[in-house]
View 1 (cartoon, rainbow, N blue to C red):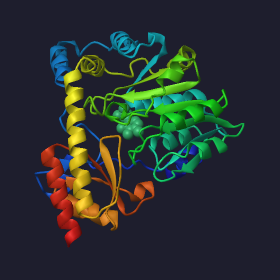
View 2 (view 1 turned 90 degrees about the horizontal axis):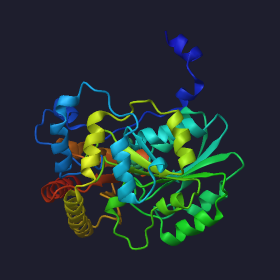
View 3 (view 1 turned 45 degrees about the horizontal axis):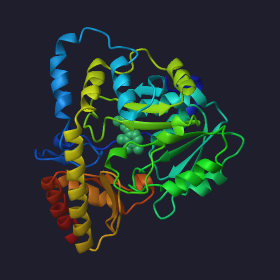
Length: 367
Ligand SMILES: *Cc1c(COP(=O)(O)O)cnc(C)c1O
């Protein structure tokens, strides 16, 4: 049987590294037999889902036997209105993860090249590698995207450049000036994918979204998600803005019912939930300041963030720190998978969660 797979499966699949997800709460309960667990590992919203979304779902439970609308009509309509963009410039996916895969399926063939930062979001490498494209990793400089170095890597084989802004796992952002220079210099036949999963959390005054480039008709895609600030990670729905030609091409490879009925309904309702977004931003800002001050007191170096997580140097083997935090019921992410073996990435939680995390971290590092 193994021989069958080895000889018949597409060779590209053997180049894929397995995805390391944030450890689910239930798994930690099973493995360690502890009950009281907080997850600060996957940048989920600690306040939970948008209440308006939950209410909308409850009201639509009698419609589950129907297929969802394959055109996402109402969700697109609302996204178009909110973002002042035409409906035919919008793509919707089963999470923005799926949109990354659909973009790869639309554009990438074996031998093509893609460029992204290192470390950055792992899905760029995953989706490009499946299609047989060659991945060019450009190391971050001071934890930030080095856009000039990325431009230098462009060849006549380059199809896509991914800019994760703010970047996961570092939380850093590329400034308006940097993006403008980059967009002036980039050849028109390279697709720029701006991954803006944490867009709503950004406070920096000199941040810009890629959406204006999309509206100008450039070969660009802006990806956003309902998984983070809207608190709908479990439902899987993400969206993107791009020019209508690209949107149409992506639609060709999209499964007819890729976004489920509840996800569409919840996402549409969540867009109206301005209160929940505001509350989540406020909580995040307060939590960020608290964690900064605690890290400083503890003498730990951290990377200032524009997102809802912090990349912090524990000065120890992060796998050991991770394991010990786990024993205390706190799940975080280790930095070794991102090439920073002494760092952890922690999601900013509620006030109570942040305190519990800091107490646990003090205990672990004080040993
Ligand atoms: C969480 C995240 C996403 C995507 O999430 P979906 O749940 O698939 O919408 C995309 N990009 C980055 C950088 C992320 O951190």
